[in-house]
Image (cartoon, rainbow, N blue to C red; front, side):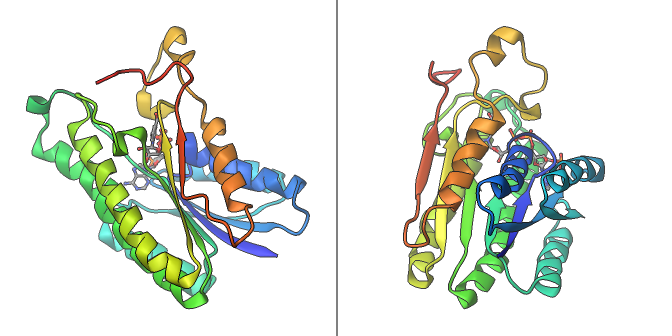
Length: 244
Ligand SMILES: NC(=O)c1ccc[n+]([C@@H]2O[C@H](COP(=O)([O-])OP(=O)(O)OC[C@H]3O[C@@H](n4cnc5c(N)ncnc54)[C@H](OP(=O)(O)O)[C@@H]3O)[C@@H](O)[C@H]2O)c1
């Protein structure tokens, strides 16, 4: 059966691993025919992950779009509506961070983080949820963070955006439960991805991998439709890298 799965931020890090994990799920679920709609700002990344997913037998579609740009959000939603008219899964993964002490954060930093993590994520979710509500089926994942419930001193705006995403998750559940749409909030601690820039081998050894997160997302998707994995919290076994 065809499953239309839209993954934002699919070009790198956690989103890329989730795309590949969905493609590899074909090996264990013979009836599963994923159509992976892969989106991010960098076309070359999307072409590369698309090839890897196709090698596993998945169908793919790539859309270069900047979620902080409302015209791009509308183009992405129109594409889904016009090409597929249906959506089984949205993975709200695209996200950005800028880190530093509270006094160093600028208005540009604020807009950069909030426009993607909150504004773009909200309006894409609003449009995709409307389709799911009509279908009376669907699954929306939010890759929030442990920073959605715990403060970190050098992550003021990032924490604010992730706490905000959690506000959307909880509100959305009030609608979603009424129409059999599943909502999963995935809260990872430190994962070694390009978001962290260059990291030392010592630091990398203290972090999770994108594949660790992707495996649980796909497992949650394959739960029977009567069951929703509402929250997944994953931390490095040694705990958070910073304790404040
Ligand atoms: N890494 C961690 O430790 C960690 C921990 C907890 C939660 N998270 C969350 O997990 C998610 C993925 O993070 P990651 O670590 O995988 O980051 P990453 O390696 O930097 O990848 C982020 C992806 O999102 C895309 N993206 C960023 N801004 C975008 C925008 N405005 N429009 C469209 N695509 C955009 C990026 O592609 P382009 O740059 O090409 O657009 C990239 O494909 C984020 O929401 C992050 O907050 C990460």
